[in-house]
Image 1 (cartoon, rainbow, N blue to C red):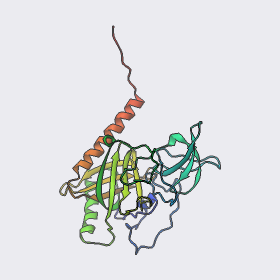
Image 2: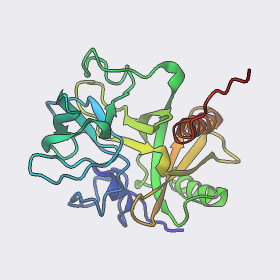
Image 3: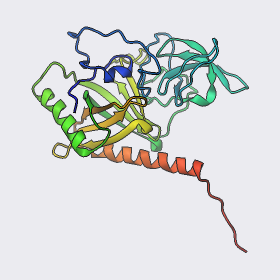
Image 4: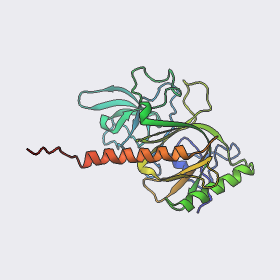
Length: 278
């Protein structure tokens, strides 16, 4: 298992850089460039100061013409208008680039109301309580691992992070977050800022298709982690969180999310017809 700690920069591809440290001001910042080859494609951070996110990218879109804009999975997008031909004009808040893109590649954002109070348009679609679960947690760190699943892989990564956390090593910078779980994926939002009109320091979205394993620590249930895979490269990361109580409800919530996602896929891929016999 790799011991490379994973930094939380504005691009999630920094998760997979060697020697990146969580929010450590003593580490020399890296210059990060986005490209389809080095981005993990499963999260983004809204960086615009003037625009608020209205949609999130659910399918990657690669532009072929000068007036189109690049979108990667998980990117937060501000949509200006939607045309009758089902194309939209908007701004990718991660890159700051504006252009047109198919409306089918984005979905209306489902940020929790208490996080974006007053920050989103009043007509923004909200996910109902029955479609999501939310948890207030402390994010400890993320660490690169050698395999995409397995309880031994998860526990070893969590023990590594917990050892550093209990030794008060400065590489571990605990951060208060809100975790939202739905059939779309896991959304982790920075909760440190009190001004809802300001963009969060980080805003990560992990699609369910890129989450390969999750679980609570077998001996200390207040610790929880999940493993994500890079959609393009054979690299994996374990993200570790601390709760004030048992994290078993989080594991169960993710299980329900996977079940619903699978049921909806099966209903779409293998539709059934009612047959009536006389």
